[in-house]
Image 1 (cartoon, rainbow, N blue to C red):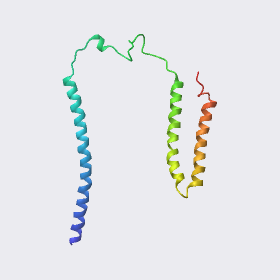
Image 2: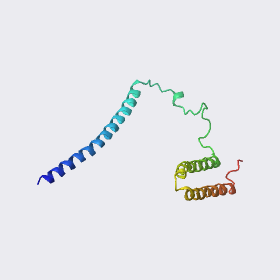
Image 3: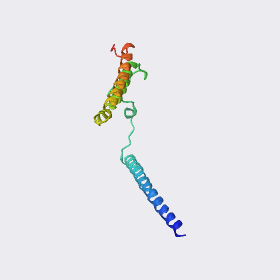
Image 4: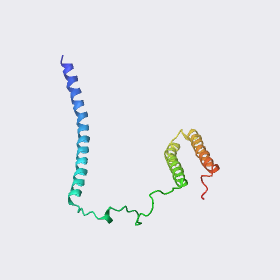
Length: 137
């Protein structure tokens, strides 16, 4: 009969340790939220509030807003940014590959896999070039 008590006590101790770990995380989250709330509250109480028409005017980069708020944006800038992000993120995969390639027993297979990966990148770059995305006009 003593065995079930020991198992229950051990299980209770393990569960208590488990929930104590989460209580530390929860306490840290509460302290963080309180810190931000106190900072915003102090800012609201301490700042001067003197609204004038000039202060309520929309202000952007030192230029007074004139005309409509609608402006045409060239899509090609976003395409360049998107292509950069794609190739930058894909190039990040080269670093773990280099560490695996250096490990014994992975040389030939890893080299072939990386050339296949670089081939996919080259096909994507060739496709973007053929579509005329990379020409700056």
